[in-house]
Image: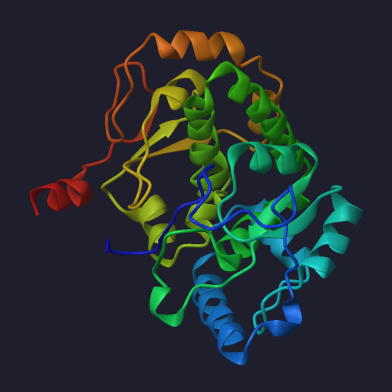
Length: 294
């Protein structure tokens, strides 16, 4: 097991058998959560709530305050959906874990966010293989109250369905990874987190912003589409938006020519820095170098 809190939120289905519904949704069955499961939520919520002021972006904190997400219990997806529908037209639907790409993209394209219904065990507070309700709801859902992120995610779903036809899932998944999951944004007070994989992680919240090991580079789409990422450890490189409004401009881009162009160029290793990169922080790389030696 790696150190820290890492969550995979990929685009591939896990080992679960397909549910009876074609869209892979299941009933959340909120009333069946045990007191122990609500207690796990509380432990996760409390420790993140202490870290995020001054580290999470303004839009995330505003979204958290606007939604029925409480410290003492796992949120009810019905209440979340009611609040989101009024704000940005989104809903939260329960799924058993990772879902097939076409299902994932179709939900996003129709402004439905598929969230894991289960919560990790108490011995998994710092690591879980698949996205659970804490990662999906605490990490992702507050940003869905922001119109730009809400429109970007829908456009991503539409683009994902097209990327499947073009055989370009890998390039597009990197865009999702380095924005929605592990993205940073420049705000007036400094760099801030908007990616759910960071904001829901006790260890990576500090690592992404404060550790000297990772690179922090200005976001450039062709560069991001070529960059490999870490799926079970801290990222070696984080990409920084000048503003969340940049996401809306990404949503308007025709990706097809970029898919063709990036296929013909070598991939970039997670910690590699290129001559043309706009470097915000050049990482020392000590964390991953130490692990490679070990």
